[in-house]
Image (cartoon, rainbow, N blue to C red; front, side):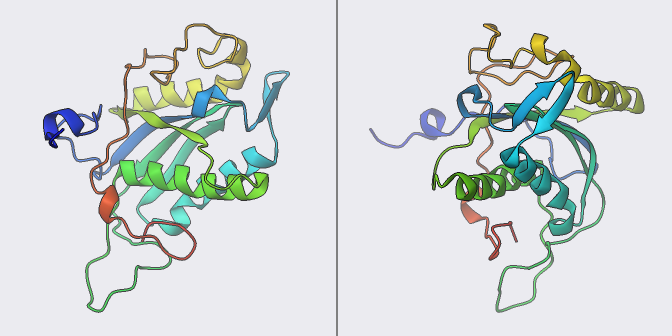
Amino acid sequence: MKYNIKIHHRRSIRLQGYNYSRVGAYFVTICTKNRECLFGEVMDGQMQLNDVGKILQATWDALPDHYSHVELDAWVIMPNHAHGIIVLDSTVGAGLKPAPTTTKSAPTRHGLPEIVRALKTFSSRRINGLRQTPGAKIWQRNYWEHIVRNESEMNHIREYIQNNPGQWEMDRLHPNQPAFNGTGVGAGFKPAPTGIREPSIGYNVVRYNDEGWMA
């Protein structure tokens, strides 16, 4: 079949026309492939991270070290997903190790899709290294995001993230919950859209440094 952009282009649920490198706060949910519980378990309302979960935590914590315009807010790792608030500020930076180039160029300001991809890609590499499963898919392709519009909404989301472990048994991403059908990522206080896909814009030209982070 001849290539047809209307048929073959991956569908995106990102808000059309919105610049996801804009200064602002973004609530993000990422989920493991097939809802597999990889990161630990919830005990007495508290998330207990295993070694895989600790890798994800370390990868999240390291994002601002590599992308100077990224600030981290509330965050929680659950057995098979994670919720976090990523804040993009006005700083422009290319990370610790700019990609090699023969001419000087302005530092790259990566948008939210690239930051989420970095989190998933780098954590996957380290997790597969620990588990000796090179190339295994850790994350489902989709992720869910919400643009945080005001302080009240920010506080609501922070509260939801903080309380997530205590609500695990009722979470739509819990393995025993039949409501999850694999087409969307639950966001708790707001129904998540279905059929979501990660945007592909810019991924083909992203360059990585020696550690695996986008440069």
